[in-house]
Structure formats: C-alpha cells, structure tokens
Amino acid sequence: MDDQTRLELEAAAFRRLQKHLMDDRPDVQNIDMMNLAGFCRNCLSRWYQEAANERGIEMTKAEGREAFYGMPYSEWIAGHQTEAGPDKQAAFEQAFRENVGEPDKP
Image (cartoon, rainbow, N blue to C red; front, side, top):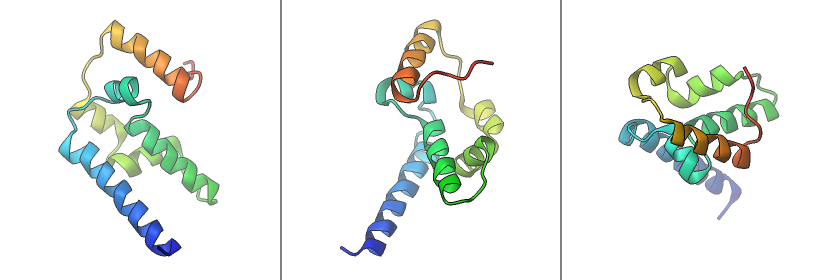
C-alpha cells in the first residue's frame, strides 16, 4: 500500500470514529471512556490540536475541541454531559494521571 492510500484510510478511520462518538453514541460519557479506555473525546480533540500545532497551525484547546465536537464544547456539555458521582470522579483522576499526566489546577 502506498503512503497516500494509507494516509487516506487512516483519515477515514478517524472520521468514522469521530462520527461514532458524536452521532451514534453521544450517550457514552467522556468520564466513562477515560476510566475504561484511558482516552476520551477531549483527548482526541487535544491530539487534533497538537497535530495542527506541530505543523505550524496555531490552534487553541477550545478551537481543537470545536473542530472535533463540531460545536463549542459548552454546547456539547449542555446537551450531553451528565453528573458523575464521586466514585467516577476519583477513577477519572487516576486514569487521567496514568494516561495524560497531572490535571491542571484551577
């Protein structure tokens, strides 16, 4: 397989994953994804932002999220995010440290 075809297939797989998470399974909470898989929609949006930045394209965290979510992140939260109990929050903090690093402190 040539490099261009591989690149196109990888891009198609990413777009399908994005569609699955945004359209087919918006009920699946980011915190559950992070706790089980070690990544979530926010990770994917961050990886998108980082890839843009590595190529000299300036993109903020908010812009990366909007590119991935297809809307401002605040709209996604309002329409899809539910409250997480203390047990899920504790598991998330551990999963975040293991997979991303120390959480940003407010």
